[in-house]
Image 1 (cartoon, rainbow, N blue to C red):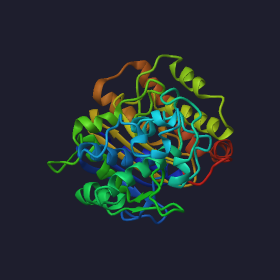
Image 2: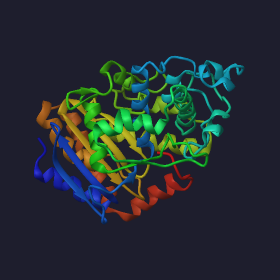
Image 3: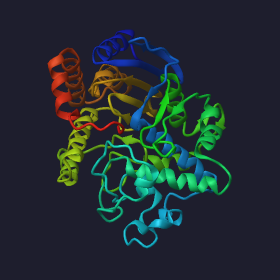
Image 4: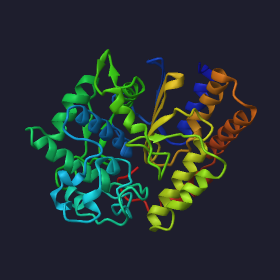
Length: 371
C-alpha cells in the first residue's frame, strides 16, 4: 500500500523537522521504522497530551468493570462539588471531552489533583469546549477515589488492566502531590505506543482477548455538539463544510492569550488534516507526538519528536496522497488538496526560518506540560 519511495520521503522530511522516531504498521505488521538522534526502539519518550488517550481508555475499562459511568455526576465522587451550582452538574464525560466548563485559561500548565478539584467553573457544563489540563487532573482524583474504595491504586490498575496485557513497559511522571499526571505524564517507547494504537484500531481486542468492550471504547469517538474534532482523549477528523471549521473556532475565541494561541494552533492542524481519511482517529502531544489510527486502511503510525511543532502533513501527506489514490481513486479536487499539503510540509521541513517563525508564534507562551 505504501511504496518505499513514499516511506523514505516521509522519513526524510520528518527527520529534517526534528523527528526522533517513526513507526508505520499496516495490517498489524511493522512495515517501516526509523529512529534518529541516538534514539532506539526501547527509548522512552514523554508523549505529553497523548497521555489523555490512555486515560480515556482506562476510564473505558473502569466503566466496563462497573466502577463508574461516563454520564454520572463527578460530584458523586468529588463531594467538594456537591454544593456548587455548576460543578455539581459536571459529568465524567464532560471532563474527558473538555466541555466541563472548568477554568482552562492556562491550558499548558501542570496542576496537582487538589488544584484541579479546586478549579472554578467559568461556564455552564456542556456549554463550551476548552482544551486544557485541569479536567483530566480532576478526573485523576475521581479515578483514585474510586479505586481506593476497592483497595486499588491508579498505577496498579493501569498495569493490570492495560500495560501488562499489551506488554508495555512505560513510566509515568508524578505531580508535586505524588499523583500520576493524567494530562501529560506518560512516557513510553514508539513500539509500545504502536501496540496501544493496534488495540484501539482493533476495537479493544488484543491477541483475541477483549481488553476494552468495543461499545464502550467507541464512546471515545463521539464528539460533543460544541466541538466535533475531539471525543474523549482522541482527536477526530469529521467532514466539514466550507466555513464550518472557521465558525467552530470563532465560537471558541475571546479567551485568554494562552487559550487563543492553542485555538489558533489547533485550527491550523485541523485544516491540514482535512483531506485525510474520515475515520482517522489520533492522539496528539505537543512538539510533534502523534499516534495516527486509520481503520479503513488498517494503518497505525507513531511519530515522536522534540522541540518543534511538526506540520501535520509532513508524514501523512506523502503516505496518504498515495493511500487515498490506492483506496478509492478519490476526487481530483481532494487529490490536489493532498498535494498542496505535501508541498506545504516540505516547505516547513526545509526552511529553518519558517520553523523558527512557527516556534516564535506558537511557543512563546509555552508552559511545561500540556499537548
